[in-house]
Length: 103
Image 1: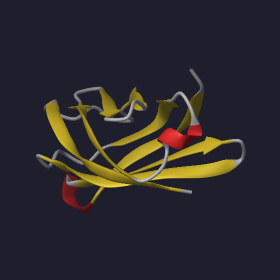
Image 2: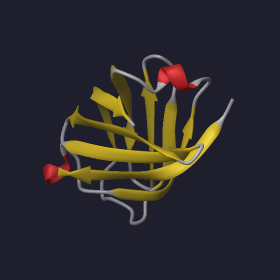
Image 3: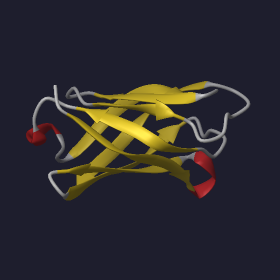
Image 4: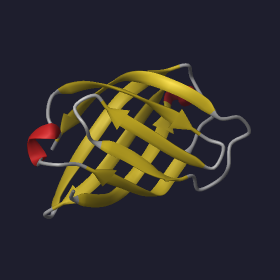
């Protein structure tokens, strides 16, 4: 299963996020929102595990966990985003939401 390095960062008060991963010198972005809102976070050491590039397209649902020291999202069609948080957050939360992949 291929992996890519990148980052995941919350924006807009902890209800939205941006994730960027570099694959074959191309940036793949997964941007979306989740519920419930969480404390703002950044993971500069995030990794993306995927089976093929066709999984990194379109709008996709996901679910996962944020905090207290790491993040983990599983996208419904298989990719997994995970990594350590730069700074711990006070309370872990299970989240779900939707994001869109763009290059």
